[in-house]
Length: 570
Image 1 (tube, rainbow, N blue to C red):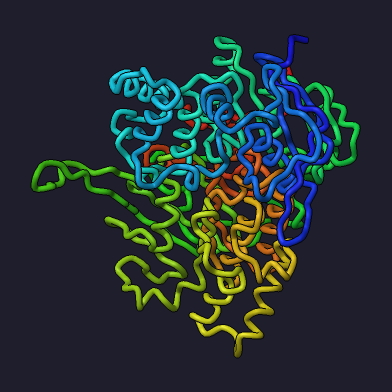
Image 2: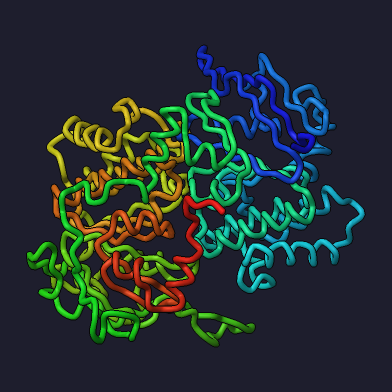
């Protein structure tokens, strides 16, 4: 084994707040040789991110302390370096990709300005033109479409996946010796994830860069890592080569995590048979531009008729492109382009595709959060398009959404109690506040969160816990239909398994209907009855999940499935 670039010895990181001391990292040791990748896996709150932030010393000094241990980077103990020496290392020699790009990118600067600022900060002699060219190259390397145009965009103008790619581009632009990647591919669709992982491997080969990679995707671990460390409650409970840990896990916790991977879960825990609800053959079954949900009574589950809850016909959502001094419309972005489908009552329909293909726009249009350009959307036969906000109000409890990024969708100034009881109060549910609080507490029980979480703020929770709060907000009104927009992307595998099984349980008990937007094919295969594949605003393939994932007909679907990281070794 080559000389370690980073060596962590008996690291202890304690967090002190309110008179309490939390041993976030407790006697952790590992090393990363030059040009290799070390993966840290474990549940939310296990200490993975704290370990990474300790390495680069980004934890607040008034709260965090290191009562023991060493962090040796190129032979220097990071814990003993003064602040000015650390500034020379951060960004140029050690770069970090953070988990939540919306809160890491500055909202008042364009993404191009933020990348060029980082470049010129660490390379003071670099000219503006050189920084521009280097920043554009970094955006192109991470597969940002039309990089020169996106260069001037602000973070809020990009999709979640595009924002994450900008973060990766910013970290890689300075060609660091050590890259710390905290869930860098969480928000990416599988094809872009495959490109990013390929890029990281190529950079390692070309530059000898080492990587500390934090992830909950064991398929990514199998592809990227030479060594794996499994963390539980601040301790490293198992360390070894990737093949050894994933094939022959020794610790019970590692075995539990691997058992929770979607491809290892027991199918159909809810007791329902995922029988085809769409025709699997004949015209309209696949991407010919027509709906394979040809009529409400065509959907069947286990031989029982499943009438359509939601019917969409010829739906278009176009955004105008305005140019010139008078801002005249010269063209349109066809985010959703002539989509027709029915979603049978009580079924889970997965919608997959790359970032920017129109998945989220379609989901928002269904809920009338985005006004359609044309077409028809009917819920229980009632037309939704054209209704005013006042007319839609009685229908809102029936239709809910769980958003992709809980950090930006939850109000940071509101207690969880207020977040969950305000919708109940607005719709006249519950005779008094005590009854509404009890309803909110019951939902938190379902989400495997403690009841005292009601009296805390969103920033006091981990990313996975915030996602469960977002799902609780969607469920608190007891809706019939929920759009789930990448709700498992921020969850570690064990929590993800619990949420998926919980969704199946709720679906069975309440005949809930879900439009499940995701890029995780393993989740699709486990959870959904039907799968629709979206590309450039159109549905290009649809059918029963087993048929679409097991025998894809379209080239694009085959490309998506081939990019999925699996627990396989060369």
